[in-house]
Image 1 (cartoon, rainbow over the protein chains, first blue to last red):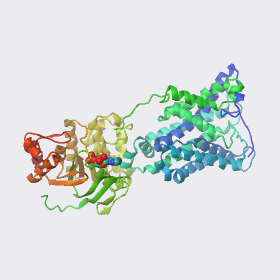
Image 2 (cartoon, rainbow over the protein chains, first blue to last red):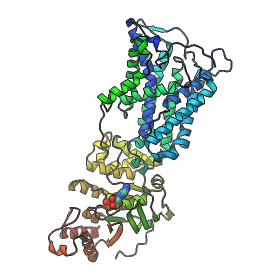
Image 3 (cartoon, rainbow over the protein chains, first blue to last red):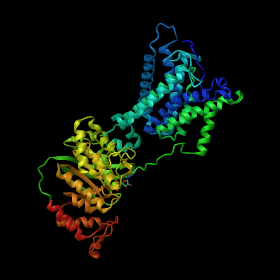
Image 4 (cartoon, protein in one colour):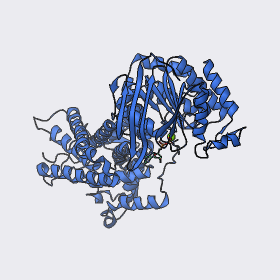
Length: 320
Length: 279
Ligand SMILES: Nc1ncnc2c1ncn2[C@@H]1O[C@H](COP(=O)(O)OP(=O)(O)O)[C@@H](O)[C@H]1O
Ligand SMILES: [Mg+2]
């Protein structure tokens, strides 16, 4: 793999100085914030699905995303490579492989140790994170990789605001995935059973739901969402083996911002965090912007101090 | 004396032991429940009634003894699998999916039967039995009143096509009028052929429903009674007043106060029992 067409740097922190924008570029800054926010939203929903069903905080979410990005790159290949697969197929393959890996890791690593409790399992996912990073480092080295946008062509101008074409893919497919998730959760038998495991695991067992299997399904779904986010992100950012942890932190903040239990909250948290980050980095002097990765941590502290239950108002449901 | 019953035994429990670490909650309980029979298990708080049902249903793995359903040993198999066999528990405090709709709660009751057509038919039957559930279809289960929640819990259990339905404290926290509605529904289910094992602190309710009462104390069955037997009736009351001694019954002929605060009058017991004889 070679670096092909790095369209522009994203908010991932390694090239923040590109965003020392003038005030005239506010609409562009906001737009790129929303675009990055979609990626954070997908990763935050991934954290939420896993947490709500299993109680595990999946620290490897960013690394599942990285794996999705790297595998998409591997299959879609650089321009002009005769062996590359069609883009859609490359994305599909990448997502399927990471999803299967998520399910397998749950079955082999998490599940046999689930009785040890949340903190132990969190540490286990940190282990999985390192494993995935290491696994990516060996074939990719510490190089950075980029991919052409899904549709080529110049940026689209809407009301004088220049928007890269990949932005439309990212926002559009995020909306689509969220719509599918909503449909699945509210209209399908498996989705309802998954929610039943979240709401009341004992009751789930009493109606015959095999809660263990839904742990696996939750991890698989979490991996799927992260991998998909990675696949749509890779045309606008550079992929490296160690891109995962900063994204995990940002997704975590987005999730907490959204109130931890609400999917709509997680999406709102992701998008608001993306916008906030873009504005902070875009309008700070380079010397400050270089500490871009501190933004999520600072924000997390602020959120936890100001509002311990996140930004959305929770409807408190009594469990009788 | 209950006489010979030639219907087949559906649920057979032998010497069941249930422990939580050092706490021995059920110490060797045996019972045989025939098709279309209704057993009531009564006893004070902490007697081990819920633990008995947990051990039978597989919610807790029994420390010893045997459970068989229709001749098949199911001891120690998980609740999830027992539901597939038709051993269904309506648990203490209902355990509904409180943030989900009434309809979804019922449909989840039919989870193990997948997309079977019978699930839709059963849903209609349950909604006919509890019309309020049809009215509240889209409402979140957590927002229902206590009585409606109990009906939903029973309805959800029925959706699993039980061979034996075990109901833990259906009257818990309900107003008397509501209790009557729940009792009527359970009676109707019996009439339709359902086999029931009911656990209750409310002796009146248990008597109104069951052919056979088992009194539990400290994890063991200390008295058994068939409905209508005067002797067993005395024994039952004695068992209830066990802590204060049988003498207190004479001391309070009008209405003896029972340890869990439930007022039982002797004449009331008589009426309930004679009702039981008529049905
Ligand atoms: N999960 C548990 N862990 C430890 N002890 C328990 C548990 N559940 C019940 N017990 C104990 O077992 C005994 C029987 O409880 P239970 O079966 O709930 O009685 P009942 O339903 O008759 O009120 C009690 O002493 C109770 O404290
Ligand atoms: Mg109990």
